Image (cartoon, rainbow, N blue to C red; front, side, top):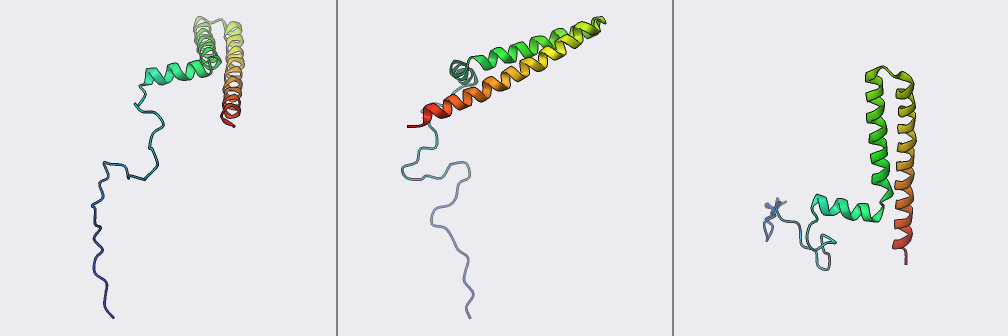
Length: 106
């Protein structure tokens, strides 16, 4: 019984280059987006989510500030407000995803 020799591929594999598949474009966009461009595009698609994020950060910041000053009643109120703002943000995110999913259907 003969042992098979080592298999040598015809074209060497280069990990720095993606494989070429006919008829498949690896990216949807022609030019890669920068962070700023992507942020602005996503904000235009669903403008309520950044508003909810800002409200969450504002409530958290003011709550921590109130806690630092010793105003525990205001601090508790702001922490509850933060939870409400987070719920608003998550709801806006899920509704945005649902609307996007409905738009993509033919």
